[in-house]
Structures are given as structure tokens and as C-alpha cells.
Length: 279
Image (cartoon, rainbow, N blue to C red):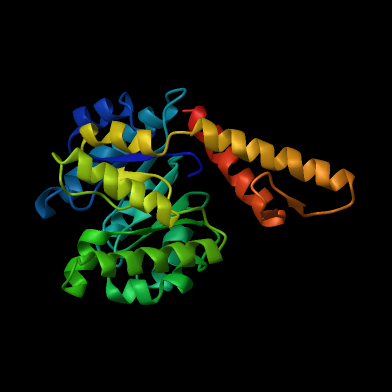
């Protein structure tokens, strides 16, 4: 997930939209078998995806592709079996609550990264356990729409508390910073930008989007900041200089103390910048 700024959801039942997304500006594509596919069409969408995705993934230089399956237990198990053997970037498991189900998904998809969506009060309570329940779990994400419905409130204070809990669980498990949940308003791009900036300040990186018009806004928020990159490089240079003097801490030009924590933060900045520039 390092450096991926935008994850564009597209319905699995609409191959023309999948193709358009793969050639668009989003850093990554999430082909959706869950919310965007009606119940009566899920089997057909699954078969269509299983029959065409191999060619997509075989194309040289394709962007990262994830698939959001249906919930487990239930039709999601059929989705996982249909996807077995495909070289996907990741599979997103929705409404994750049970670590045992996650481990069963990992057994069905060896070698495929799992991204867990926390979308209920129970999932939120268990998110620390979920984040470390299987080696193939590589991301913990928040589904704010379903969570707000389960809680009966989407108040910003409640969503901030949920965001912080998921962020803490992910980082405690050694996972990357989570990407933000989708922003439902398609037309209010100023509000999208403001909310994305807030999420970035909270420690998130990247965002799922549901429409191509949202992609440039999200990409711009998470684009490498030249000043931030220069500062990170200066931190590493200062750390190297301090090391030659036999110390692991030093005084910055602003009169603050800097140490290994500053070095690690600088390394994170440069790693994300490198990942973004490669896209």
C-alpha cells in the first residue's frame, strides 16, 4: 500500500468501467463484487470477473488491482474460491468481525494480501485482534458508511474516535497507515479536500473513492510535498552528522531536540514519496 494515494471502486459487473478505471488517474483500482452488484447479479458478476481478470493482470505495467468480495461467511466464500490463483494485489474483506473467518480467507488465497474493512461496532471492538490475526493481513481499513449505520450516528466526533482506534490497531500490528473511507458526496469537492486533509493530519494515507472526479483531489492531497521531502532529507543528513560525533540526538535549527523518532518519521516520508513518484 506504500505510496498509493487513491483506490477507485468500480463494479465488477461493468467491464467497460473496469477498463476505463485501469487507464485512468487513480493509483489503484478496487473491483467490487459487494455493494455495487445487486444480489441477483452476484453469481454472474463473479463468473465474469473470474473469466476476465486473468488477462487484465497479465498485462505488463498494470496498476495495482484489488477485489472487494462479499461478506464472510456467505457469498464471499464463493468469491474467494473464484479468485484463487489470480495474482491480485489484494482482496478486501468487508464487514470483518471474526478473526477465524479471516484466517480461512487467508487459507483460500495463499500469497494474496488481505485488506480488512472494519464496518461495525463488533469489528471496531475487535480491530486489534483482527489486525494481527494472519500474516497475509496487510491493511486495516474503516468503512464509515456501514459503521455509522450500525452505531446509529455518523457524528464527526464518533467517526474521529473510530478512525483513531483503527489507526492505532493498524500501527500497533506493524501495518501501514490506513487509507480513508469513501466520501459519499460526489459534487462537493471542497468538502472532500477538507476531509481528506483532516484524515491526513490524523495519520491516514490515501483514500478510497467512488467516482473518477474525486481522484485528482485525493491525489493532490497525498502528493509528495517538496518542502516536506527536503526537511526529511535534512533530518537524515543531521542524523548522519550526529552519528560521526558519537551521539544519536541533536539540536535542530529551530532549537528542538531530534533523535531516532525523527529519523524514522523522515524515512517514512521519503518511502511514501518514492512510492508515489513511481506511479
